[in-house]
Amino acid sequence: MFNSTSLRFIFGKRALARLTPLVAAAFMGLAGRATAQEPVLNLYSARHYQTDEALYTNFTKATGIKINRVDADDAGILARLKAEGAASPADVILLVDAARLGKADMDGLFRPIKSPALEAAIPAQFRAKSGPEGTTWFGFSTRARVVVYDKLRVKKADVDTYEELADPKNKGLLCTRSGSHPYNLSLFGAVTEHLGEAKTETWLKGLVANMARTPKGGDTDQIKGVASGECGVALSNTYYLARILRSDAPEDKAIAGKIGVVFPNQQSWGTHVNVAGAAVAKSAKNVSNAVKFLEYLASPSAQNYFADGNNEWPIVTSVKVNNPALQAMTGGSFKSENIPVSAVANNQTKVQQMLDRVGYK
Image (cartoon, helix red, strand yellow):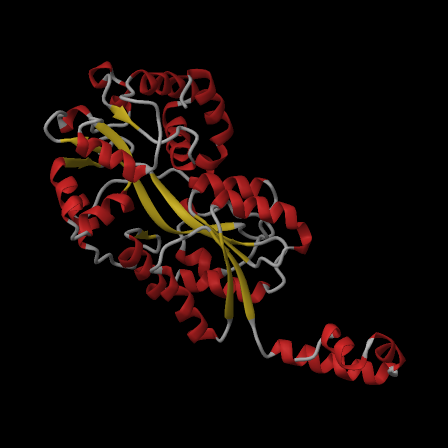
């Protein structure tokens, strides 16, 4: 393939300068045609799940568009986008939390797009609010934030709402990861929508008072803490639980036998659900390919990969789940909250201020 660098190598810098404009244009036109024959998509992804490899491979097989991927955590991706600015090669951004999607949107890192296919497939609750120029981001899978409890020490009825986690009856039992982790920021942002700021801050103070230990680790560590007896009750995203339930490892089977799972607030507003989602980067050079990729993520085949591969729920309601771990947890279905995830994301700043005031680490 010819480009300006390879032409300088072939002819030398001075010789290239002596080429007639017509000849130079001919060579550069050839380079442009060669590039056009190799459609690409530059993907920045915070999803680190092996099963997603099939998503990317199948997209390339179906469209002929090659995916160049950069993997990092959400914070690293957003920092890189800001540093690269308009020169960023990113076309699509994949993130795994509504709070992160909302923050990136507020920072102006996404390009609004118009896609009738996506608007029809993705419920309004699970995408950014549409404006005159289009929609900036879409959710493509969901996960619930549930309560895990020690079946020997804790009664299910004592932890079947989020509010009860702050009740003095659960003093010394609660374990969580950092309150400032996006998974918790999103949950607390949802509670703020339901209860209001004043009641949510009082609730957060109650959570701090009930801690069995200082917040640390990830969701899997909270589950193991319950199974070991260090904690009586904990918060976790469902896909971490599903991994343990689907595992054949003896240690995981032992954990599964000791813990119970509650989908909170089934008699009120429903269990909090979060999203993994995607957007077209503001700097995208391959916008058409980017939109095709987002539309592909809403297809039945891709939605099934989210459910079967990483134990998430499809966001497209017509896609049926056939995941035994998810079905075992829910008994087939559960009531989820119906507030817009974009509103939850917009609460993250005030939630962080509350966490600072109540001393939630």
